[in-house]
Length: 151
Image (cartoon, rainbow, N blue to C red; front, top):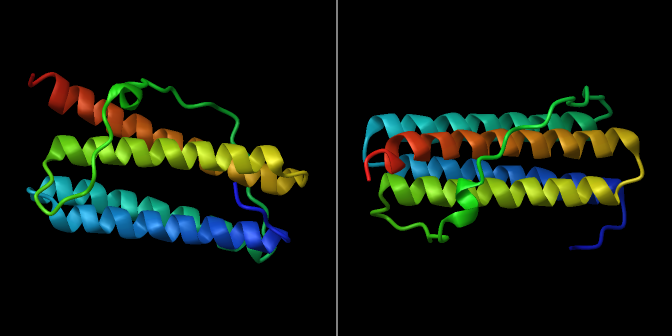
């Protein structure tokens, strides 16, 4: 993991990471084969924008309330082969890609939280990790309902 010299460096990294997620979901939305799928990915882009705004708020000195519940993990993404984004990506591949991305974000934020001594920042990253876990769960449920039931 990268080494940071100041808390602002960590926060800037997290802000950049969330912006990358916004861009990722917007790109998937544009490539979607149906308006419904596009709308789903646009909604996730908006949620990632909220994450980014939360980090920016903490950087500006605001406190966020910590999360108190853990999110269920169906672990479907753990058993699927990673895919690369393509212009003609189908819904199944897009869901797999999204699950893998959310799992990576969860792990990143959990690792960052473990390295921080500041309780407020640790709570921020644990909160972000749980939000990413929620996203992954949503994609897993979507996969279960629309892909596994069709096969």
